[in-house]
Image (cartoon, rainbow, N blue to C red; front, side, top):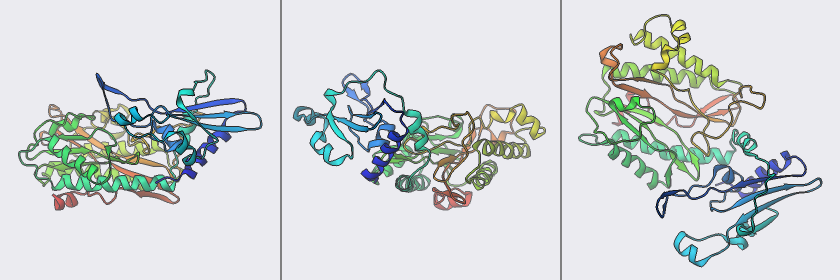
Length: 392
């Protein structure tokens, strides 16, 4: 739980950064129509939530900064018995005044958007880069729930089952433990489906002797987790599967050890590409000098994505990777990022030894940058071959 005093400190920081005689507005999300008169489940705008902790729609946070005074106003919906009957209770103006540490609370029906309002989304994005102790605690809670879900996926009897049945088990664990939503659409990709990076159909049968790439994480009180594990349907890795898996795992472990304040994501990326390329040459997947292969981007066919991303209120947190001068932002204490190397080999790729075709592997953990290095927040989720086979 994040205290109201922390939200106020964030708002005070925003107010301090605003230029004199300026107005800034941050508004809540709008409901999104699914079809006809039904909506998707409502989720608050992350920037608005970051500054208020308020989950209602049709709300606005307004900063008015003059030469000698700054005011912070919150607009909320009025109480309405009919609307609340259909859509749930509203806080209302009176209770909002008691709860929120703002200068004034007004009704949303009186809100008028200013044409000269300053866009402060980039400022908030910079603020969101560094996580507070409260935020880290919520992310750790999300990860602990996700840990249980992934372990249940490993234990789950997969014989004659479909991907969506495994997905249901994972998301049941999320909800059972107080996470009311996943942080993103779960990927449960078996066999060759794992070579589609954002595969979310999850409708194919789980075939014996294949692997399942599971990229699934829950959200706890708006804070995300993002975990990927790749596990065997049968509970045991074959020799080729083990060879590829250990290459990805060894790469991930080495990259994680590089994380510390001052480190650059681009260097993590380059190192991952070198390690994976050398490993693929050794296994006969690529042929040639690793430097020349990387220069020609031949490795991209099998490792096409980045080493990781920021994580927080959003699974891909809306925080910058470059500063205002266009320079890369170095890692700092309090940042959280994912580390997720992978190798993806299509079933139809005849240039690769047959034993590796149709295998897609990704291993992903959530890493906190600390004063003298890193903390792997998801280290308790099984990921070595032996650990996975022992649970399965």
